[in-house]
Amino acid sequence: MLLKGGLLVGGGSSMKGDLLVENGLIADIAPSIDEIDDATEVINVEGCVVTYGLADVHVHLREPGFSAKETIESGTLAAAHGGYTTVCAMPNLSPAPDAVQTIAVEQQMIDEQAVVEVLPFATITKGRRGEQVVDVESLKSLSCGFSDDGSGVQIDEVMLDAMRRVAAVDGIIAAHCEENSLLRGGYIHDGEYAKAHGHKGICSESEWAPIARDVEMVAKTSCRYHVC
Figure 1 (cartoon, rainbow, N blue to C red):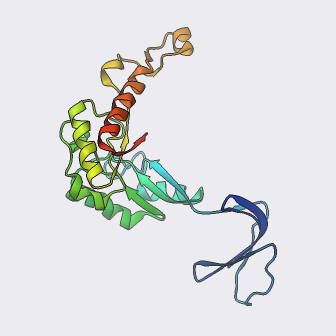
Figure 2 (tube, rainbow, N blue to C red; figure 1 turned 60 degrees about the vertical axis):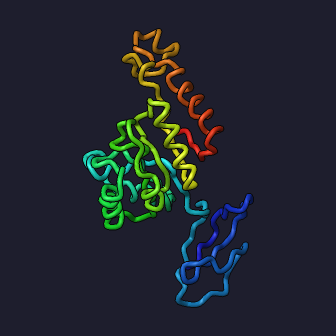
């Protein structure tokens, strides 16, 4: 397959040119490629960008449990349409991927439906309830990381235990940072708009306070850490 006339982007630079693919691998890149086999498919991509497959580390495919919102098939088709070849699926599912048995349910659906690579997150705590850390050691090889996405881990000791165990297996925690006691029934940012229109606001501290707590724990544990 020969892609002709696209904007080739990669390696910190870009150029207009042609890209030849043979047996699934890039065989040549040049301003113009004309000497090809008669059987080679030629696609005019002028006006298009040709680059690496993109990755999205935070997507919601909603299966198992919430297929009315999204499915693995529909979500990965959308990803492919946008140029994404790898996505990381968040674990606010039912059943939650909090054990080998439950993440296997999700993985089977991925194997059957996904049209791009899907890497599932395991939960940080059982049932995403924030009370007991999952069996990190058994889930490490089955997941791309650990997250209770949609729910912040409220108990300091639980998060510290999770970080120590995840650090020990060189995993990563992707934290939903939200302090429930500071929400106070709010539903949008507590800023000028909320005040002007009579809305119940959520204070910024509800987000930065758990981040500050977690950063201190990262310093103690050397856990790899990402703020969602």
